[in-house]
Length: 582
Image (cartoon, rainbow, N blue to C red):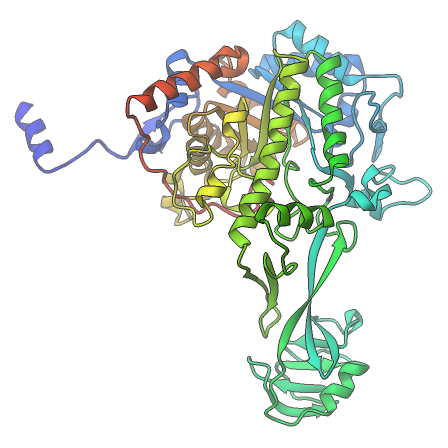
């Protein structure tokens, strides 16, 4: 035996990277033990057998399940019987109305076919029933969303979603987006140009077709190569292939072009409110506006003063609307003050570009990295305001954040939910951006690890990307938090609708890599998955957030270890998938 050990050491052999693990009493899985167990939070949770088990109850999708005291009591009892120790109740969905009486917003009293009695307060009942059952109660809010696109689109005599949202009534407080349209310059004239595949959708001067449209040509066309160089002069009957078609001023321009002319595509910048040309479902408001921030703080204030909840969470709308937001006058004034000079706007931040096949891009300006870090600082400062307000109103209430698990998404929405001391290989992680991390200001970080595959080893067997797994999402989330806060991996039940047995692998991957599991959502055919959850959660656990001192002990242990020279191993990089958990 000794000879075998010595031989193993001599050739540098180590313990197998992938080892069987069963943190839950269901089908074991093979996990990357070298990465899954890293960190003080992981060690503390394992030693004390802590594990958070959160059931998320979305407001609009579950309105009919929470519109009476009897239904809420039954919901709480069932959650406890399954093995959950925490319920998350959505009290301000993206439409901006609330599930409790608020001085800042109307009540959510109807959604599709479900209704809520006007004199019924489900939040008060949830507080009472979770206290009776010994469960923790978190409430979630959408910080900067004040409207719902579907509700806006379906207005009429009896709209299924009710009023579209407060934000539509206040366009001056909506986020201002930097928009761009591809144009071709003709003398002093800009001809708008858009890709289209349907002549009926042709509402610009010029349109790019990759093949000849069926039916009648909407105007003359020139054949062009990939550089938009004219190869066949304007005709109303072009051969099949790549072509640019014109109408109105665009038609006149095409008829003037000789073979060999190269059409140069550029961008024309525009600024618009978030409700103009809205594509994302939430209506995003302007986080630079003091009025918008004060309204968001008002909801936190009245909840923490009036309800004994265990934690308040911000859902994923704690962010800017995208890389294109916010370019409001308030943002410009504040950023120019930040850099100490007047700017070419928006070119000193970035310019929108278009390729010859009309693919949109951006050209970073001289203050691009400064802008990205500054936007993150705006969000971090707001998180600090919320942290202080919660502590002042109800010191026993904790504060956390839900976000998507793919960290690479978040620079473009101005959020750094990681540790301010994170050292990792992300190109955007400049020192200034890193300093805006707010993991040390929150008590728990919940990330949506909404992947179909549970483990890295499974992805390798299937020839898939290892980053699109619950295990990789959990590892990354835990390492990004860097032992400043508890990390819980979120699973979306709808992901497993076609293959419910795969939920077991996902549960194991989440439990092995973080200190808790969030299950989203009660509305996702929950009965189908309940037997799996019952088996997985049959041994009761205590969540690490149950005692607020635990997170303080975590941070103090971290401080002592760092003072003694400890540094965590390098952060692994998994590519993930854009949009996961948003």
